[in-house]
Structures are given as structure tokens and as C-alpha cells.
Image (tube, rainbow, N blue to C red; front, side, top):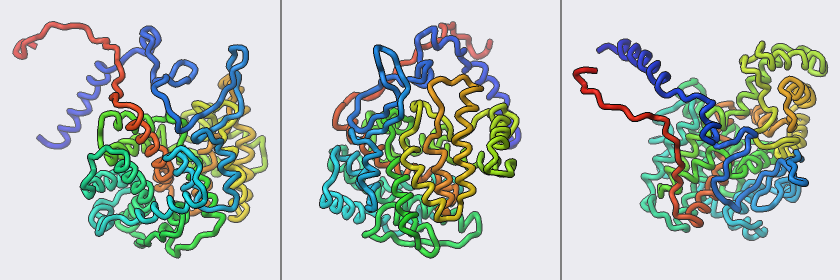
Length: 450
């Protein structure tokens, strides 16, 4: 058989799959099934309990659900206060990681000890970069990282030990090595596929995760304090989000099966790389490229509104009718991460001479919610989410777009680790959902008479 025959066969058989695997949407409410584990109002099905984080988007008064300014709490602490309390200090991400893992804010001495122990874990095994990361360079950095995570398991003699000290050790080692896995995989791709130069810089133990990321990424290893500060804040804001997101749920599902840490985190990575989950800021950047190509005056609100309406009407950009970075599945009036992040975005834009681009972002933030609300009749409120600005920040930091989703993973590994530990400590039940079968009983037909 020739390969073309195989491709033709697959094409034909896929039509059969579509025919026999199609389920009418009307059947879901009929059987009380919530598609995507969410009801018609977007409220998630209650699947567990957690102490790690909380999202607030509505208040309840006299039994009525009222939209409110969004809040995100890490172990009960408002992220706004975490950011404000860290003014002019380093290791913001590490402080947040400590809080998520151990459930309490660290003292200066506890944070110093935690950072020192993370630093000890920063180096990958001998020859790992050459033998694993460099062997199969790919534009898919998330896939390369996932392969590296699973391979790290073969170096761990206690891989399958589920005792909490051992799992905590594994989680801390992964938190510390994620930046190297991401950046080295990018440099391998840039060198072998893009014909660029190769840079393999070693991390420095006294630096933060954010500082080391910029150091090992850049050829000259240099960065400004504002650059490191803004990236540090971005990592803090992305490290956890209420526990109800797809990759965190994946973490808990695979943990509940009794699997090892490397397999669990690899599964979470596979979830995060999906375009519906971790690629939102990339879509924002692609959209912004398109808007810049069609809008001449970034200060002309009428011109911007005209083009945004074309996007909403599926006449422009990707013809999906979406203004990316606007609205959120949970938040109503505002995304607290965006509220916190924006002032740092403005500072960086000023330092980088990107005030014109900042003007365009500000105008879209002002105009888009009104247009979406009018056209889609959305009454809970539409506001920019953190992804509206995160890609812009990464661009100003000269971070390649191939690393945008891996940066999300570098942050979120802290949240995944906290949820893995909580799942192991609090329950011994495997997560096993139920599905309603729609199949009807059929009589077997012998092969020779089918």
C-alpha cells in the first residue's frame, strides 16, 4: 500500500467517525449534562474543595447575583496586596510560590531559605541539554518541555514515591528547572531550525526566576531592573487561577490516579499548550498585528471602532468575530490581574519608547467592551483580561513568541504543584466522572454477512 492510499483511507474513515460520534446539542440539557462542566451561565460544576486560591466575580444580595470588580486570592490573600507589599523587592514569584505550596506568607528568612533551595535545583542533569533538549529541536517548545519533563523522570530513582517530602522535592526541582528547559529548547530550535546563533548560559543562584530567565535568554545576558520586575509580576499573576482551569483540573485528575509527578506535570503541560487554554496572548498579538496594519491613527477612536466592528462582524482578522483579550469566562466587571498589571505595562512602554502602541491598547480597552456589549447583548460586563497585555509585555522584553505559552507554564508550575500536593494530602479517591450512554443495544452480525 502506498502512503497516498493511506491518506485517502483516513480521509474517508474520518467521515464515518463524524457520522457516528456526533451528539445533538439539545440532548445535553435534556439529560441534565453540563457541556464542558459548565452550566448555561458559564458557572463551573463543583468538582472539589481547595484552600489554594479563589476567584470572585459576583456578589450575592437578597438572593440576586450581582457583577462586581474581580478578585483573585492566593491562600486568602488578595493578589493586589501581594504586589503592593512587594514594592521594590525581588523574588515576588518565589514569594507567591512559597505561599501556594506551604499556605502561609514567608518571613524574610523563610523566603531567603526557599530561594536558596530553589537555586540548588536550577541545573539540569549532566549532558541533559545536549542529549535530550538538543536532539529533537522544534518550534513546539511546549512539546519539547513536556518531553524533557518525562525524561527527567528516568533520572529520578524515587520517581514513583508518593510520600509528601519526595513529591515536594520533585515539584521544587521542576519549578527551578522550567526556565532552563524552555529557553534551551528555544535556542536549540533557533539554531538548528532557524539557522540562528546558539546560546547556552548558566543560571546564577543569587538571581530570581525572572532574572535568570532574561539572563539565559539574551545573548549579552543583560536586563534592566524594570524588565526583571515586570516579568516577575507577570509570573506571579499567572501562577494560579482558582483551581478550576483545564490544566489544573488535569493535574488533580492524573494525581488522583496515583501517577508520578513527572507524568502529572507532563499531562498539565499537554493541557496548557491547547489553543483554548494557554495560547490566548498569542492570539491577542496576532490580532494587534492585524489592527496595526489597518489602522493609521492610533489616537483616532472612530477609526479604531470602525475596524473593531469589522472584526466583530467576521469581516476582518481571522473571521471568528472575536476581539481577543476582551472578556473572561469567570470575571464580569474586571480581571484583577489586568488591573494590577497595567501600571507595570505602562512603565515598561514608557522605558521602551512604545507610548504610541500603549495609546492603541488604551483605546481598544476603552472601545471594545462597549462594542461587544452592544452587539452581543452581554449584560454581566466585558473587560480586558490579563492576556490583553501580557503578550505586549513579552514583546517589549524581546521574548520570542515561541516562548509565550512556555512562560505561562513557568508561572503555572507553582500552582500545579500546590494542587498536586493538596490532592495527595486530602483524598485517596480517584476522580472518575460519569457519562450518560446514548448507545442502543444491537444484535451482532457475523462478519461474512455484513
